[in-house]
Every structure is written in C-alpha cells, then in structure tokens.
Length: 198
Image (cartoon, rainbow, N blue to C red; front, side):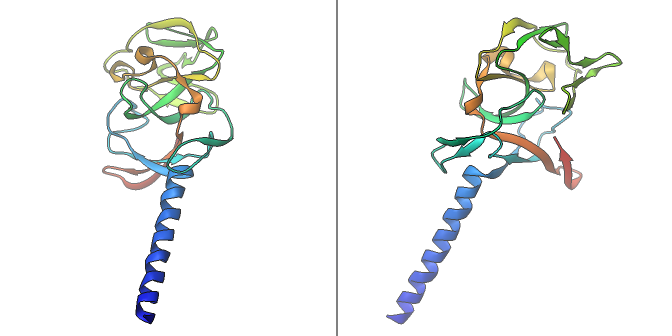
C-alpha cells in the first residue's frame, strides 16, 4: 500500500510538472523552426527562433483566449501567426499597422508616403528600431496598394520579396491573431548555437 502511494505521488508530480511546462510553452515562450526561405536574409530555412508569446498579451494555455493585452505590434517586428488562408503557422515581418496607408511600386515600400528603403542600399529597409536585409534575387514581388490597413490589423511581408506568399496576397491580419514576436535566432544550421537578435 505504501509503495502504491509513493508511485501515485511520483506520477502526480511528473504530471503536474509536465502540465506546467506545456502551459508555459503555450502562453509564455516557445520556439519556431523556419520552414522556408521566405524571410531570407533575416531568417534561413532550418533556423530555430525564440518566440515571446507575452509580447502581445497573456493567453489562456491551450485555448488561446487573450486574458491581458500588452503592447501592440510595430512596423519592423518579426511575428508568428496562422495563415488566414490555410491555418498553417507562418513567420513574417510587420511592415504596417492599423491606420497606415501602404503602397509598393517597383519594389519600394512606402508607408504613409515615406519610403523605408535606404537610398544608398535598396536591399535594406529601415523601420527605426529594426532593419530588414531583403533578398531581391527573385525580384521584388507583387505591387500593392495604395491601401489603408484597418485598425487592429497589421500587414505582414516576407523579406525575400520575390519568393514570399504574404499580406500582398492574403491581406492584413488581425493583431489579436499574432501568437508572439520573434526575439532572436538561437540555432542556425552550419553555425550551431548562436544569438542573432531580430
């Protein structure tokens, strides 16, 4: 009887620990494995990325209901969300937020009439707190707009502009649907463990 009690206690302890760990992964932080090249050169296929799931609010574990709101996404941040078309988990860059008017012509991103592309290097976009090194080897992709992003939404795009299925095709994404903000690459194939802030 004592042995059964001890085994039951150990099983319960392991079960509670597993529940706590899975809850933390569901609500606080997680990692994401980059499946495609759509975010080159910022992210490469196979990169493992740390995702801060508290960045845009605390969610109920396993269900996803938002309990407490936090900061809103800003242009330049790399975010994780589900595709509005397929439900597949994606990682892209926020290029505009609600209220912004966006236009892309000949590869140049204009938000509220201001170009994010650096004059001295058309392969880099400067968002202020974030910079994106674009892969333009397949061209700059589709033109877009001018279009105003609805309040509470964001427009997301891949940094590999000619090889990314993104907001230019599926439209804006509700900010409330973002799972979290990608913080840094912590593992890159060929380089091993690393720390590349995003």
